[in-house]
Length: 319
Image (tube, rainbow, N blue to C red; front, top):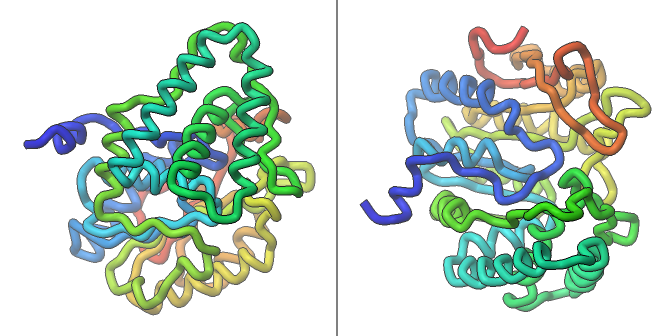
């Protein structure tokens, strides 16, 4: 067994904290996947995820090597720069070197907030380059991780100009770890059989590639739980109800292909109205405790209820 295969004996963590991460739903999502495997009668399957984000579910599935081929997509270009930098081992080595330098500089600094603002400006300058070169993509990726580890609450948000504008966090004196080299190598290994793309979701849901007994995981930006809720997308222009309706339309086509899907979203009447028009689909309400942003928590008793919607039965999942 080579070194990279040995790394699979422990967990894989997403390299970034990302809005709407699925870590708190992993138990339910894995239960759903086990039912998918039973009903499809496949152990090693092709996986599609058009709203990848932090990728917690994909990395969890990678642990047991159930995925034989993955189609991973996100509309956020800098996020996909990062994942492509990790996938390519030469770029990953350069990324690790840059992260090491940034981490040492931050932990030695007496003016961390000033340093943070300098990094944020540099990141936005790189983000504005139309066709960045490979070394610029790696530098941008290193800064993305550094900012993610030191900004307020690990939030990723951009203003109307497309600039990252999250303020500095509260890490004034403590030592901060930017990266785990062993984990980045595990992420690299997980991406071995993955195609990474940077497209809109409707282009990423490619029906020449989605076939019978494939698994499609859909985690679009959440429909707001109320008029004042801060469940906002990290996309520059948000995610409209019309886009949710387009995605709902595509669920029928995924189902008609004989593929299986799992969709997650907020537990609202609008979510149900949009996504449950097809009476064949199943909904499951699950409890999560989710910190959203500066406003605080979206609390309902032990947390907030979210929806998991599937085109197959998952016994004992949620309510």
